[in-house]
Image (cartoon, rainbow, N blue to C red; front, side):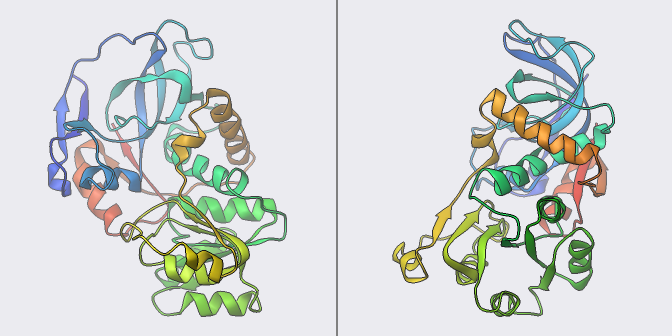
Length: 324
């Protein structure tokens, strides 16, 4: 029987349980996908721990690739046998097979492997909205990107290079900094040994950056605000170091009429046509070699607890995938 990963209570990786289940025929608007590879993301940690609470018991996983095996009524853009990839706000990707609303399921070009397809959807669509749908950025602008050696970060370094945007990266070791530089960052700051605020000010001759893209959260927000130039945009899109605490909104005025936003990729891809346009741009950059994805870790589905521990410990480089 097919397997899926579920949790019955929030907490540590020991709560991840592999369960067998029966697959029902897809409902209207759904397709059945036999997974070939599954992406692992930090949002999965947030959901497992309850930082992003879900109704329990719940399946986990928001990103995968595979082959369509059944098509429900009302589906025009997919057929049985199609190679596909998706990112979905409905958890359940940690599975051999699943039924899923077809609106966010995109055809995967033949030249992109299932492993890359599974690893690139959530992260790549996140980078797409950061650079194109969150604040206006021009060629030659400078952005600060935290955790730039992770799965999202390495895509962001390459994306920025392809768009003529100067990306100042931060990472937690000299080795990770070197990786960010190799992938297109103009500068990289080891935040464990250097004051990133001071370094950013020096790099920008005191001007600051147009935008900060920050998935780290609590530990980096105060310094990130200090790195922005007047009218700059603070984009907080994750909480790897903990949830950002409440702060006095008047600080934004005092620091130069700053802007702050807390987006999620699922808001941006909720519309079928928009999701496809975003995916088309992403797939083009992957197909033409603009984006070369590093799959740094690969685990069988049966090792899901180990995979979570390594991701949560920030011991990963690039993207991490599961193989059913």
